[in-house]
Length: 509
Image (cartoon, rainbow, N blue to C red; front, top):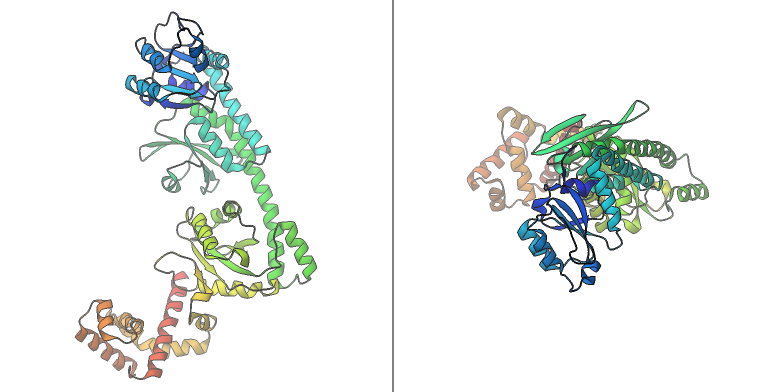
């Protein structure tokens, strides 16, 4: 028979609402048997050490003379008992005494039946394996009830974490992180973990991974995380895996139906197949959207290997930020249509934060608002055009409204006339920099950014004024232009802007 610790008792016998308020360093003390306090002196009889003392504050008040909890804890420390569990309010003095003697002081809710706790502890001590199986079955049943009630995989993960006292992560069958428990402090570490069945040590923590399977079909993985994991933890996860697997199966089926219905609706709008406004509004209402107000297209792009995870989790992200908006999968990630009423800086910031917390390398681009669903395709084109611009140095959403001259350049970037203009004005300079490993293009851009101010340009690129003048002279010679001519400067400035678009497109390919 295994030795039972206070920690075991807390996880396997006491109510889940129980909390330790003092004496945390004594959680590995061995428990011999439960002992219930009586309402008469002596309130405990024949204590031999290791007892799990169960006390009601009301019973202490009924003793003549009344006994304070602090005095009782002091007396029990000389036995010593393994822990003191209290039903009722615990005062600061009792907490202080428990910490001094390193006795776990445990608080239960006022409506808890002490005799039921006693019976649960007796079962645990008398037949550890049976009680372990019983508690695991209780947790599995609770998760199943949460699934039936529509609690969702996130709530189920958090509940499993609370019942085991460990942290929990759920992964897809492809290894993408789906959810973690709400209080999980190891999210960054978990993102780097590649789930595989069994135990793995990661940064001083044990990651125990259990596959989620339904009818021999892999659905994902449950990962339990803690400094050290016990067999009771693994047993609980094994029993809970059925409920988790069923929830994932249900989610996959519902998401597939929803995505197909939602996707058909949005795709028909964008292709012009759906034009009857009454039908459009009716179908939108069925999906929970109001398309009567202006909308703008928003594209969220992530690295190619993260696209499936983003698309799988995106409905949950929208739910978290409280937005009901039509969305579909996109070749770069996802695309949604945001109603103008919520198309404000605070909302975009909130959506950005919600997605970037899971996908730090995202890009978000935004088209202009359009009044009618018939013009949604135009907002999409604008959001996709902004996606062709280089990623800004500081991660932030990019709106078509704010890209300035790029609004003119983006639609024509690949025309033969534009390419001819680009090569004619900037080609010789690009060839020179490539062959000589020079910095003339960088110098020219800085010169334009500083509106031709030589002192500011030299300071920006960290060169002497004479070096800057030499470089500008070389640019004039190589490009066969005079930089003091306003039309020449305008043409070169436009060519530099085109270079940003074309270079980014080339890198993306």
